[in-house]
Image 1 (cartoon, rainbow, N blue to C red):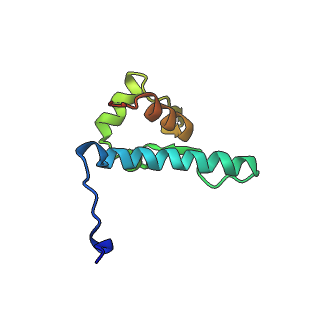
Image 2: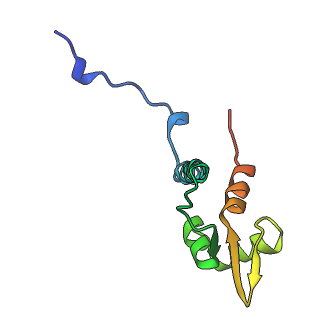
Length: 102
């Protein structure tokens, strides 16, 4: 008799995903989709985000976002007192700080 329904593979610690892994994957997937759609002449996402949108997307406090601006980690544009962030700069910041453990 076969145990085909009970074939459970052992999961190792290094195979588990963290919330950070999933958030990074989400950002990478969105960038890939955007680049594919750009090639087709479609712009589905807002290119420029306001501070509140960036804070929600990256789950940051006002102070942490300000620190990223001040130390030059995240470029921004200020127009009439409103601060805008380019989605490409956000993605570049995340990818450049990716940590790969072996």
